[in-house]
Image (cartoon, rainbow, N blue to C red; front, side, top):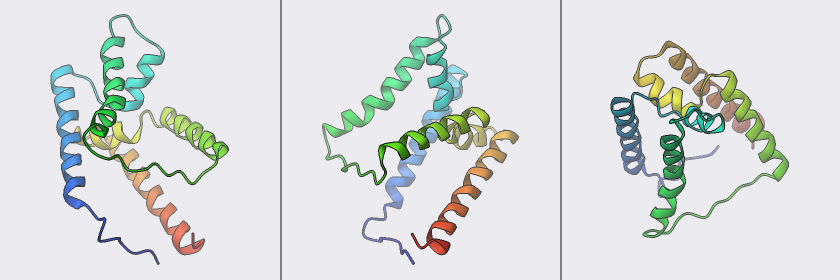
Length: 145
């Protein structure tokens, strides 16, 4: 049975990160009247509307630039991916299809939609969480992975 790695458990930095994400999402909707769901922002770049692409491009650029800027001042953790290219492509396609069918991604529903008490987002976030719990249970207790 896996145990919590207490030496690397960082609740305060995780809490601080969550607070920053919440503040950023709240400021984005208050100042721009737009939801900060990544799939919607990125989707708008794939089918641009005149006068709407600049803020979307800046948003996505910020998502890429922020870790790069952080890397100038701190050591970034090594990326470790325990999957082959085929599994990664399949996973990406499944996430994309799920995002389209679910009318948004986990960030849009979980951070922005729940904060607005959107019934659709509350239901979607409940399903995301239940699926995650079920996956961990099956992987760790039934398949012993």
